Image (cartoon, rainbow, N blue to C red; front, side, top):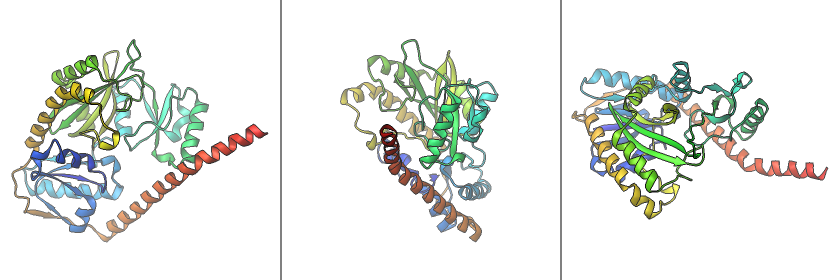
Length: 354
């Protein structure tokens, strides 16, 4: 049995997969939340994969370390993946890659904006996988205004990072985002997205016979296998998806997501039938490889055997306080994001009147 552990509300990516392409794994794989673990104070024996580490609170990471310790001593034949205290998250990973000359760009904390020398840059949150909060910022003055606006919109300074822009467009202005999974010790090329936008997301993706042929070749040949293995090892991640680009033929890490989307969510909108048909060969290669890799990390131990853990009252109080803080931050950001456009329009109107 494989147990995927994530904060409450952060495991829908894996659940969507198990209900669709991963149906054959039902009964062999399931999801546990930290709320369930804290309530039960016990862990069924099996292989464990820790997801969404950047979404875990400090106390959840503390409890996760206890769980890892207990499980690692319970049996030697179970697999444990992504130690929450050891995984390198976005800022640390990008910093290490720059220091080791694996990346050509650097990252800074937002409070360190005065030290930025190389422009353009952009601002994003450290611990989410959405698009950047800003466009490209070409001066320190633009950067300062963007950070101030982000704070006004409800984001916390401690959560913001500044990333130097790395232009990986080819001669035609096309950007490519390569994505590859790791499951245990297996690297699985997943997608190659083409876009005319430097923020390469599903929306605006270029899909045609030429791009799909290039994507299929990428998934078939896994041309950056050695670099991928080295990068996942550097990040101490054995389950997740890396997104990266090529600068003059050299891979550049964008991020590694420890809770990756495996299938396109319904909310993202339907894919035109012609595009779906064109990409069928890519899916037919990836999904059997993913299932095979997950089967390898499965364990044969009896999940009715359990390991007990102890969650102290102190930890319970801290968990409650962290949840309240998370809700307050989210509520503040939501309220401010609704009010801010009205205030900005009012300010512009007053300036025009004067």
